[in-house]
Every structure is written in structure tokens, then in C-alpha cells.
Image (tube, rainbow, N blue to C red):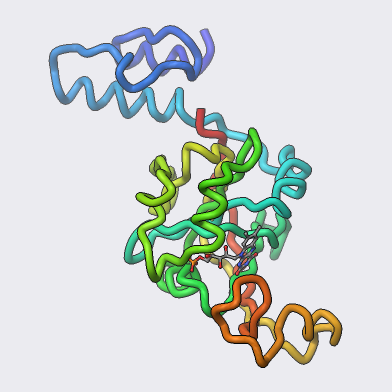
Length: 223
Ligand SMILES: Cc1cc2nc3c(=O)[nH]c(=O)nc-3n(C[C@H](O)[C@H](O)[C@H](O)COP(=O)(O)O)c2cc1C
């Protein structure tokens, strides 16, 4: 008997299948507490498949230019599309690095909560989610509602993942650094940071980026 089945047996119920059950299919025992306990075990065992994040480095790197999601949960849940980022190692710890412009709603939330989740699609981007989370701001709208995001509670932090983009990386902010515009090659500085463009221009504006290095504290695929 593998560990999943063993643990479910401990709850006194044997669930058949491996990650294919929906919430409605979880058997009821007649006791609310027992049902909650079984649902919680079932969620842990059947809903998240732990992964070795480096096994997915290639997939994440290829997904980035099309857009993956950076989620925060400060004043409310918010999700923004990012195209820049990378897995890494810093001070011997596994890390995920993201780059966020000053004007993003996300920046204030990151500074407040010092944690984030990364959500990566496994079957290509959802155009609706990409449009709403990549061009509209949490300052103006509730993206969870507008984009129909289905949230999945995280394991080690308070920022949920997103079921539609199942590969999830939980991160606690380890290091923060503002970009130094003077150190950026001139052609890139002129193209990406035109100082005469308002900070409302989406892809190229006068705001520099801040690098947030998140220490990876958990990684899994939501099934
Ligand atoms: C494909 C794509 C990649 C993007 N990459 C980034 C990025 O790496 N960093 C960033 O600050 N903004 C990036 N953006 C822009 C933000 O997603 C966008 O401004 C978003 O509306 C910010 O949301 P917020 O104000 O709720 O934080 C990207 C947008 C798209 C469509």
C-alpha cells in the first residue's frame, strides 16, 4: 500500500482513485468533524502532487515569455502576469526571482506580505486570464472575480495558488533590490524605461523594476 492510500486508511475511509476525485465525491460519514478531517486529508493527499522544482525548469522557462502568474494576498488576492523571472539558488537556498515595476499594484502587496505564489499553466495560457491579469490592475478591479480564478489554499504561506494554472511555487521573500537604471545598457534603458513615458504605459514606461527573490518553500502541481 503506498503512502497516499495508507494515510487515507488512517482516516477510516478508503478513497479509490489517485487525484481524480472531486469534492462532491468525498464520502460522508454522518459526522461533520469527521467529514472535515477526511476532506482535509483528501485535499492534502489528492489535490497536490509534490514536485522537484528543478525538474520543471525547462517548462517554466518556456512558459515565461507567454506569461505566468505572480500572486499576492495582501489587502486582497491579486494576480499579475509576468514574463520575466527565473529559478535559481541564492545563499544555498532554492529561489524564484521576479521583476516588478514600481507602478504595479502587486509591488505594494509584495512589500506588505513578503510572500508570493507563482502559477504556471501546464496546458498553455488561458487568453482571458492573461488579458485581465496582464493588462488590468488590482488598483481598479478584483481580478479573482473578473478573471474567474479558482483559488487553492497554499500549504506553507497565506497566498493561494490558482487551479487553472496548476504548477504552483510557494515563496517567502528573501531579498529585494531596486534596479539601478545607470547600470542598464543604454539601448535597453531607452527602450524599456523611456523617462518621458507615463508610468501607465504597460510594457515600457519610466518606472524601473524591483527584483524580489523568493525562497521556495513548497512546490507542487494542483490535481
Ligand atoms: C506577457 C506579459 C508579461 C509581463 N511581464 C511583466 C513583468 O515581468 N513585470 C512587470 O512588472 N509587469 C509585467 N507585465 C505587465 C503586468 O502584468 C500588468 O501591468 C498588470 O496589469 C499589473 O497588475 P497589477 O497592477 O494588478 O499588479 C507583463 C504583461 C504581459 C502581458
